[in-house]
Image (cartoon, rainbow over all chains, first blue to last red):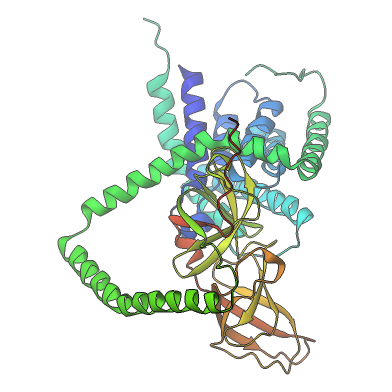
Length: 158
Length: 279
């Protein structure tokens, strides 16, 4: 049940990244898959496998049609950085946690950007900063919804 | 979560390093073998199809909630547009006939008219690095790599990857995009490059004393043989002569609203290739 919910959640996060809703949405939407991975890593008791994060990132690359490997590498590095200080992040007050999430999302976005710059040439764009910022601001709402869903889907032993 | 393929006894940094190397390997491999990209586009199709359905659902809900007044004003606007367009259509008809007669006089074979099909946008990816659309027509519908893609107003871009069910279109604003143009009415060959900005293209390497000016319309020149000549590309929106720059900086406003595309037109300039039938 939980596994199906996870896969469905991932599926919808992926569709939310490519849904054709005009240029403003496309530039400013937060990276939903990265948010989901962060939530997954913070709230789950067992450790998230890097290989699975990598595979999810690779599939995201396929869906986005970017250079293969960009999201994969960004996802793995982001989750690695999160795991280096996971215990601290869990105990942080929510405002400081928000800042940490922002840094993680920014790292993710910049890594993807650098990986693409490897193929083309570099242009700076304000969405590189605004996307992660909006993602971090949405984080409390995001955790609220996912916490509720997780609670509702938890298998009950009666 | 089980440690799939990768035992946890190795230190995390080593695991990350191996995956980073693997990413680089996959990247290089996908650049080298374009077939891989076609396969990945096919695998992505279910997700993209779902996103199109979601977008359609939102649009329907939006239409449903739109007020009567808004619909009426839109109706009036469309009527006015139709009335304005009708003389132009008539003119085009006359020109087409005249053209046919002239070609007959010249004893040349008339060009077969191009075939145009409407395709639906099922996914978009606008980042500074890439400006891509995915449309719901692929190799099965006869789409090929390098095919010109039009939209209301002019050229939108060209097909860069094809899978059986879908294909990917690089918009004019993509970093890798470059299209041969000329000012309407003149035959100076120019290039218009994408800069990763959805409503701003650029003409590179023009001298500072260039004769191009704001308001000049640009059409495809047909050089390179990829786009047919005479299609609208855009209008020059700014010419900046900066003191210490060796070239003039020329910005072009694309003729198509590249960010707002829901449907695009796939253009077959040549007659549609039919698969050979074996008796």
